[in-house]
Image 1 (cartoon, one colour):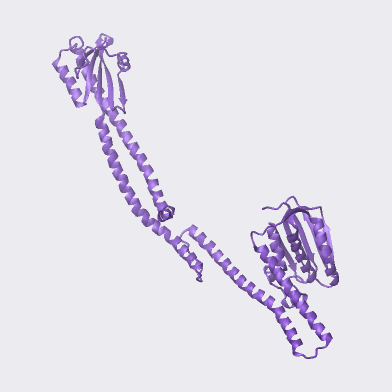
Image 2: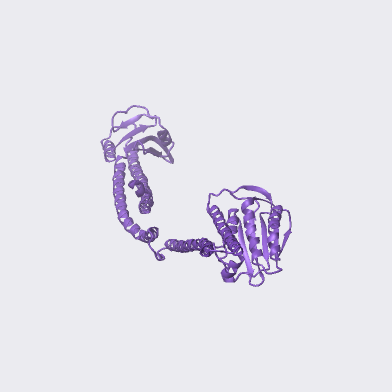
Amino acid sequence: MEKSKLLKSLRFRIIMLLILVSSIPCFVVKQVIIGAYEDRSVAWRTAEIQEQCTILSHHLATSDYLNNPISGEVDAELSMLSNIYNGRALIIDEEYKVVKDTFGSDEGKTIIAPDVITCFAGSGTSYYDDEARYLDITTPILETEGDTTTVKGVILVSVSTEIIYETMDVMGQNANMIIWALWLMILFIGSFITNQMMKPLERIAKGMEEVTEGYDSNNLHVDTYAETQNISEAFNKMLGRMKILDDSRQEFVSNVSHELKTPLTSMKVLADSLLMQDDVPAELYKEFMEDIAEEIERENKIINDLLSLVKMDKKSSDLNIKAENINELVERILKRLRPIAAQQNVEVLFESFRPVVAEVDEVKFTLAITNLVENAIKYNREEGSVHVSLNADHKYFYVKVADTGIGIPQEDLDHIFERFYRVDKSHSREIGGTGLGLAIARNAVIMHRGAVKVYSEEGVGTTFTVRIPLNYIA
């Protein structure tokens, strides 16, 4: 577990990245330098040996060594050449026979090799075998008579390049020592740098941990880097949102307690009033029982609305999505609500611009539109109207509910979808309701991946616009 945690550590990965980034150029430079040294050394040795062979070829030509291979001076030069370069020298005549071999093993033998043939054509050759670690050089032995120059023989020298490889090995070992030293230095410096880099992140982590443990943490202000500043701002926004949600939760619990307690208190007062009187007139008894029945109905409506909200709050809530004729569905909703509107002398109008078929959950969509239209009726004025319209484009359909009611103050528009929020609490009590209708409507629309907007002017009226996709997006 600790090993896995170490491998996932940002500090460890930064150090490893620094080592990797520095190692690649080091190894590349090492190979380039060693390769350049090898090429340079082979070229230098080739040129040096070719110069010695050129001088030797003049001595061979002037001493007629090819026809009479007995010359102490030439033999000494050949032996010196072989010893100095740790190699072997062969003198080959024009019949491709070995006249002289410093090793003494191939004298009298015939050698027909590509380099020898090329050299007899008049140009010296060199061949380097880096695997076998040897260098072959051929130099023509020229004889000049008047204006004519002919090749009478070839000097073939094979020398070992082992000393070059030994030097390359030493260079490689020294380079590796430098790389190891560099790694240690990077490890030390990288640890120091990453520790400094991690401090802002550690401060952020500590602040988050304090919030997780329940401490009342202040806002983070870690602006060491642009990234930590962005994280701090995002965290502060999240913290502010959490505080708002916590306050909203506390207010919601308080409102639920109050809303549920109010009808119970009224019922208790009415029941105590009846119990305190011995002979209660039938008319009074009936009036009190009707009031108690109304309070029970009010309590029941609050509980039902709360249950509706709880069901919609569940993210795993299943929607019964089917293709529905929205025109007919809205007509059925308005048909049920027109009697309520008639009691308040409010006219309900429906305008459809085109036939609309969309994928919705009939129950939840009905709940949303019903609450919006009910609100428009409740908060309307005498002889007012509610205008419901339906329209659609290629992607969405739109339901607009506009009333001629009392309107909503601008300062309250941002809160009307909150649970139990009432613009005019005294007026709302008289009208009735639980203060949950708009919250239920908004949740139902959101479950359909839609949106709801509100426009209002006090004394003029309010308009709610619902936008829902024609095809449900899972």
